[in-house]
Amino acid sequence: MDYSLNKRKLSVGPKKGQEVFVASPVCQKQRISFDKLCERMAEDSTVGDADVAAVFYKFRKVLNEYCSKGYIVDGGPLGTFRPTFTSKAVAREEDFKPTECISKTQILFTPTADFRRLKNVEFFRVSKQKKDGKVVEG
Image (cartoon, rainbow, N blue to C red; front, top):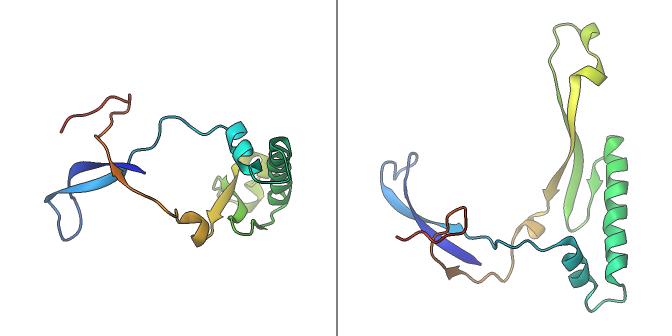
């Protein structure tokens, strides 16, 4: 994984006010497409990339169905998926109307500790990158 070193002035902690160097990951500019992911998942397997894609789409549909009913879904080695939403506050209980007060329904994903941890990572220092992809000197 590529990283760059960035000079920062710390604002908290025992080194507050000191300038230090902190590493930041430099992510690849190109994303891995869903099709490429499915192709890779199908490699050395008895299923094709279309089968892998079908499983992902079905998983999304079933996950949405269960979470919409309030279930927490155990995704095995991936982690758990649980429903959440935001709610407006009202002064009186009788003023609460779900269709008006509840919004932003979402599925929250919590990866397992093992899934969260990257494995077999090698680090390579590169020049600091600007947001537009140009190299920053220094």
